[in-house]
Image (cartoon, rainbow, N blue to C red; front, side, top):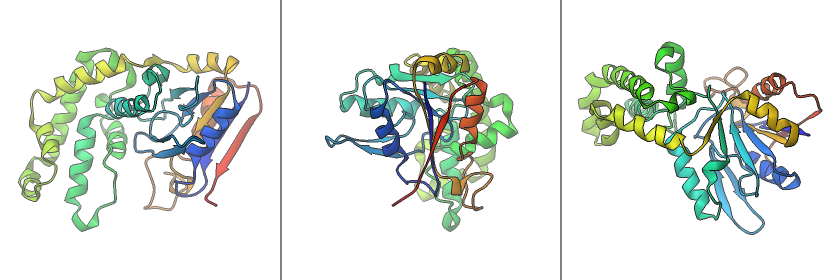
Length: 286
């Protein structure tokens, strides 16, 4: 079969989604592999018939019949955002889009506690805000490094007890960090839901139940699944963001918590012992 990698050679927003949609229409039932970033991605596709969708976690070829998405371990999974995106696709006539999603069990999961802390932290920066989109990506990565025992992985979504335990630990961690500043944040009138999430003792259980419920709608898999698929399906590796904001090679401090080059895609191809030629596209703005 064939494998193709699509990355952005700039700062992002160069048209990766359009390229992936185009390639998907030239192939038979390709599998789109997401290999960096998370739900903060915004890959716009407008079909020749005028159908428009902004892809975040679903592969940007999902408007094409038979296309499936594999979220690799390098992707940060946001179950809530994934479900919301599936509703948008259903309105466009895509039947049961969640059935087209496969998630590597090793993928990190962004929880509502990460997103709440991300948004609170951004508000507290005042005029020095970073411009964060508030999706908890950096927060999740930082916590994974500092508190690996609290990292929720996609494979944990099979167990309500495991997810609840880790979410309770995350809630306690974030509460301890922000409790002295609750009055300051409350005075702004901003983010009341985020404050409640860090103080509601029932929140970890409710979050765990909902994330496990959502996980039942997609397939939890491993790299062996991707290897089997590579025998019979073309693979399109869809990057996110752009190489100029890469965590290792970008222009600091304007960088992301993500490897935006084709490095992760190369690792995945090596792990499945892909034997054929790989085509690499770098997208730039016209």
